[in-house]
Length: 125
Image 1 (cartoon, rainbow, N blue to C red):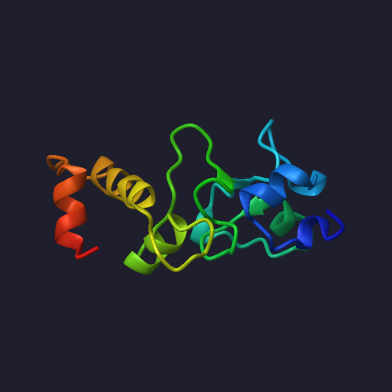
Image 2 (image 1 turned 180 degrees about the vertical axis):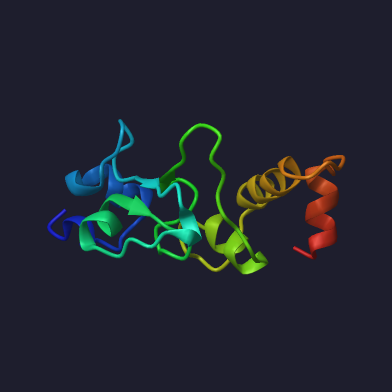
C-alpha cells in the first residue's frame, strides 16, 4: 500500500490485496503487536507508535492487533469494547461480532455464559 504505516484502510480485502510491510508482525500481515504497557505506556516516539498498538488507537481492534500469550485487550468502557469488536468500523455489531464481544466479557468473569440467542435478544438487536 502506498500509505504504509499511515494507512487507515483496515478492511480485510485491502489488507489482502496490499502489503503493509512496516506494520507486519510475527507472521500476522497487517497487524501490530499490542504494547504490553497498554494505557500505562509512556513512550510516544513515532517508531514505538508505528510498531505497537495501544488502547484508543484506531487499529486497536479485533483482527488488527496481536496479543502475546496471556495478554488481554484493555477495554475500560463499553465504548472501548464496542470499538474493539467492530473492526470494520461499521458502527454496528453483527451477530458474530456480538458473540465475540460476549465471549470476551464473560471469559474475564466468573459467571455462567449466557446463550448467544438469549444475549442477542436481550440486547434489543
